[in-house]
Length: 415
Image 1 (cartoon, rainbow, N blue to C red):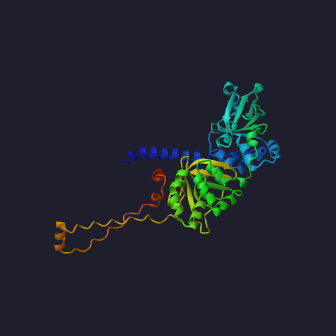
Image 2: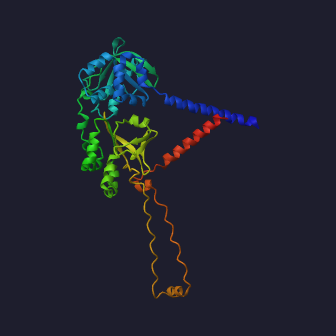
Image 3: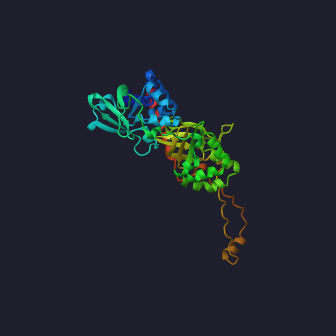
């Protein structure tokens, strides 16, 4: 009997090892900061990748090439005293969304390639300015140039720093890539018009409501310079919610608006890596008015006990301000934790006076009044607050399945 159990147990053990290996290989993905730390000549470039949060963006992506420049090239850039937002745009132009190792650079089809960059992916690059032209030149040289630089190739390939095929390639180029679009001055964060930005990206109703509440709007703008992330409900979601919003007290309206702001700058990569509770502008000393960030694949969800919302679009990501569109209004449990009232049962119509049944009932012995029906189960807060019709039950069931699978795997390991 015992020998019959060995094959499935061995198979399960092997599967468990493969499963755990996959987990470790995922968790130990490339880390651009650690790669560049081994090369002191790139310390300034490495520092600004961290300061602009581009390092986190790089670490969450696969099939990527980082065109690093040495400290001397970074000194030339910093001598122009660009803002941190401009530095982010310039450095994001040096992150190619494709893999270019030393061998591939000298074997480019037709001798030239146009690579999209992280600058293009942010949506901040006008037109095709977020692309980089890579050309295999004569004499073994490879030139690099921003697409909006009149076809010039001012930077040359110097060497390969580190390659992890076909995940990440870190190469050195001779200088910063000139780009009029990336180098354009950006307004100071505090000068950003939040409601104007929201209005042109499908969140006009929320933006108009926010601007109508001076105290809430001031709280948002006062936090921009120190870092601010805003989750902005799209127009359809906030329009459907307006009747409930109007029924809130003045303090409740203020808290709900501030609940959609986080006093920390968060990129998409940071949101994906920092799951868990997140304080908001409405959070008080008792640590109330917070929500949970949770990922389901590439989908970022924001959860309270009253609603689950999804991040649907990046409206702006410009250090230190990020604004994301969400498909539902975030409902703090402090304001929406009550049960939905159950409708009272309608009274039965009285029988007509001349109806024969009425005379019969009068002759019958009076019976005790029947007990009133128990209240029907109240609608759950999430169902009551769901204005867009989304259902998050699938995510909950998925979490349960993951826990069960992990339990089974480690159970087999103990055999």
